[in-house]
Image 1 (cartoon, one colour):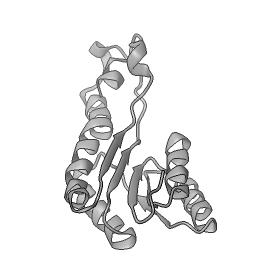
Image 2 (cartoon, rainbow, N blue to C red):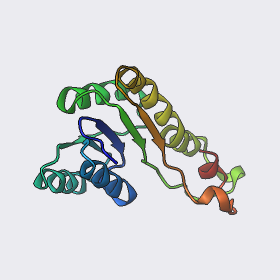
Image 3 (spheres, rainbow, N blue to C red):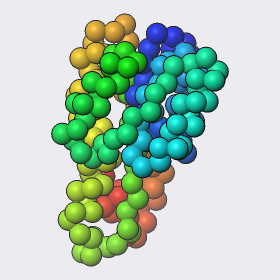
Length: 159
């Protein structure tokens, strides 16, 4: 996989699967925007690791469910690393696991905001730069939970 000259934005890019995705994209030559919500130290560690191997990366703090803030995020990534032509929507939040009848509307809104609405809005904001590039890619990471459909999982699985 050759990604030299490309810029990838990875939500939830500082920990877990997102960390591995950020590292793999950088190893393939992409400049990587490591987007994180709360663990600045983990994101900084990923960025430092990429830079120490000669790659380009920067960390960006953002709560992606704050849809109105996403244009500023994409603008900041573009200013620092270049136009985004690879988007990886990896960020996720856990559900409390309550039955549908007991789940607060705010939890459903939070889950949908993070898992679905943010992915849509980020794609909407980055598609113009992808169309201008030789290639554009959008990857949305899901969960193995959607195959299980466990009791109390409906709000999470729906999102």
